Length: 431
Ligand SMILES: Nc1ncnc2c1ncn2[C@@H]1O[C@H](COP(=O)(O)OP(=O)(O)O)[C@@H](O)[C@H]1O
Ligand SMILES: [Mg+2]
Image 1 (spheres, rainbow, N blue to C red):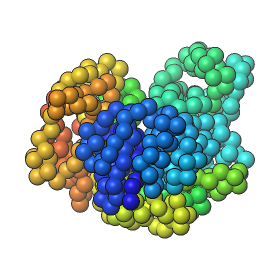
Image 2 (cartoon, rainbow, N blue to C red):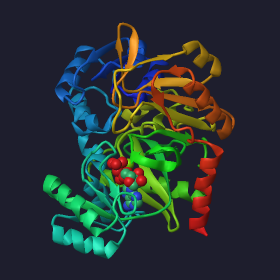
Image 3 (cartoon, rainbow, N blue to C red):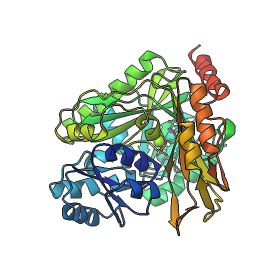
Image 4 (cartoon, rainbow, N blue to C red):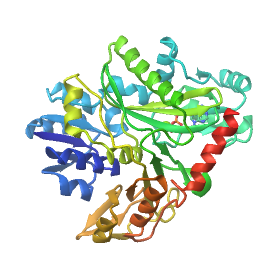
């Protein structure tokens, strides 16, 4: 069986590994990921957001099933091009991925179908309306409507001191997009609930918590994600009801899309926050998270290609995972995220990594004369899986020590003290 994967980050590297377990991997990448290239039967370098280029190669290679991974590629309609070429596809078409690339669509859909869990919000088109809404809501989150690579949302207190700062950003967005989403600021602990959907049924993956801030103690600028942890079951600050509400919101949005004649097939990522008023929805993503994919795919027991097939055939059954803790840490270039120093050579002691039982996945690196170099983005993800969170974290640290070069990472992700802080925070809010 020939399985096509579109994408070239660390998230795609672990997806590639899963595919290669039981099928021939065909990969389309915008830049060569050395890990994916090694696993692939064949790979093709092109602009992956070009639907025609991807479609033509898939036809030429006689692909049996395709999985399109990154948000920008889904938003560009690459799944649609594959579908139009009669290639079975286990990823959302552009109209379904709209749940991610159009934040106003997601919120409006929730409103229309009375799906619980939205904070108060308004989509505004003028400065006057924006000022009224901000005065009305008090603390707010200001959101560009489209994709921004995780760098567009700004929140009162975190990024804005006063109404003037807030309005400056609103005006900037209105000028660019003609509309902006303003939400009531909610407070609590966030988690990522990823799930498979065949358009009708869903199958949940274990919840994961990501860390967006660059520095320890959740300080510094936002990043693509510095690392994540999962217990394989509930996160330590969650209760059963939080997961159940997350499941309900996810199922409800899949049902709502179907009522709009849009089938959501593929991976849905429901981003949620536990608050004192229960679980709230932050946003939907139409794909795996990166790093969160690495947590869950390290634990998956069902053959990944079989899941893809069941999505295509619309007979998804429950996917199984081992209930083990996992910790992912991203190793990033010196100066990341704003002043990264690229083009530095890095090396991995693969034997030592193997002995440690941990694993690594290449993110944004390139190869030259057999050597690996950094770019401006995240370089390598390491993951430790073990019988306790503490041991999984230690294993991830051991793995980080096997990667040499001018890189750094957050040492606090998955540690007892940070997780304890999350538990205490949630305890205070619930009290
Ligand atoms: N209503 C909100 N209240 C408080 N914080 C929010 C709110 N919406 C988003 N955020 C914060 O901003 C981050 C980014 O927002 P999100 O909607 O996920 O956009 P994106 O991931 O596309 O940047 C979230 O992870 C969360 O920390
Ligand atoms: Mg998000």
